[in-house]
Length: 258
Ligand SMILES: NC(=O)c1ccc[n+]([C@@H]2O[C@H](COP(=O)([O-])OP(=O)(O)OC[C@H]3O[C@@H](n4cnc5c(N)ncnc54)[C@H](O)[C@@H]3O)[C@@H](O)[C@H]2O)c1
Image (cartoon, rainbow, N blue to C red; front, side):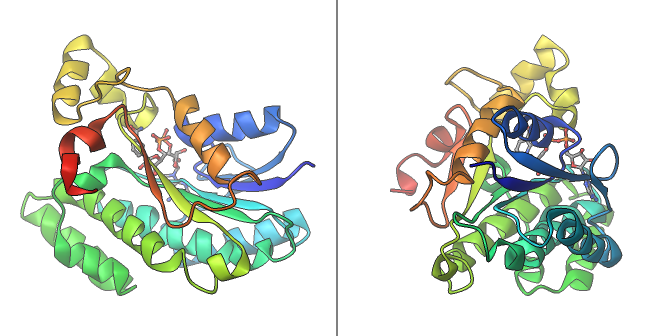
């Protein structure tokens, strides 16, 4: 039976590939993005997040089957915190009530293997305390101290921890909603264009992010995982961060995880 999916960041890269795959399989997709989407809103703002919920409710008639919180930025900016963490949470929490009438409600987010990279605990803690002003302030401090490179990884650590903390709760598992994340390695999208443009650049990024299994991936690779995570077939994955990374997690964490 055709299902209705909401995908943020649907205009480009992984979100666009996921939307295309779902539509090809006969599902209805409500795409959300800053531009070129069914709903154009800015997920860094409170107004944009509220408008997202209102407009999804109006477009869907108040009933959706799956949420894919995928929109993200990888710049050294406060906006990266606002969209990657607070925008993702607003998407997941804000749209969760609209899953209530689905026969197979599902939710997933796009995390990153960057969650394995060095991060800033103060920024992660401010996110998890749901203190957006403090988180944005900390991100600005990191930028001023020329440590802005810690921002992206910190947003993804916080997102993964939030998912781990909430997936088994009454609101999610208790309501029959699997909540999980895909954590990609390096994927060929506009976000990573500077890392994939030349052979030299690719070599350099693969030294930082080892991907012994098939190297840099296409967005459709992640799309197929997000499609599975949000499909009726996924009945029992709960709070999993699934690394789809050509092996960087296995190389970098080795035995430490299991
Ligand atoms: N490309 C990679 O290698 C890679 C690796 C790991 C994780 N990711 C994650 O995958 C997700 C998708 O990234 P991508 O590689 O497809 O990048 P992309 O830049 O191609 O797409 C991201 C989309 O998010 C949208 N977006 C950004 N800020 C927004 C905002 N404030 N409000 C609404 N939409 C906004 C953009 O307009 C864009 O269309 C992101 O969460 C990213 O962190 C990407």
